[in-house]
Image (tube, rainbow, N blue to C red):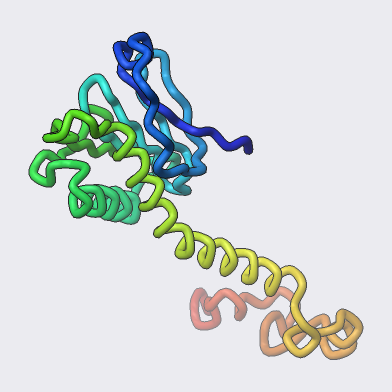
Length: 191
């Protein structure tokens, strides 16, 4: 995955010939810019995060499945963003699509601060903070799969041993040909 440096400049700054500010931070994200100028971040394993500069909003959508764990992830995202001052906590609400949550980005007090750059940076920090949990979960799933499909010798039996100890008929099932004893009908329909 190629690395991108995101530099969002207002059109007048790009045309005016002003001196560009040095890059303060760089983040590595799977991100796309849509036709309307929104940024969609795909790095999180459970949700996609959209930052809409034209409306100053952050929206999160579930990737595939729905459930309480998705809502908990979205709740953690907006709590993290509100603690960092990126969104207004009382603006967090359900979006117009099922399972989405959205919040407003407050307009910056300092006009030199780009709220979209700050939002992208803080979302990257949130994803970085969540990554160890999802890495452990994925490793656990892989370990369980390996344990089930390729068990160690102490947790498995040889097929030869099973063939020697198993008998074709065991117990009281079908002791007599034509008997209904196996079906619990021993006392019924006696003449």
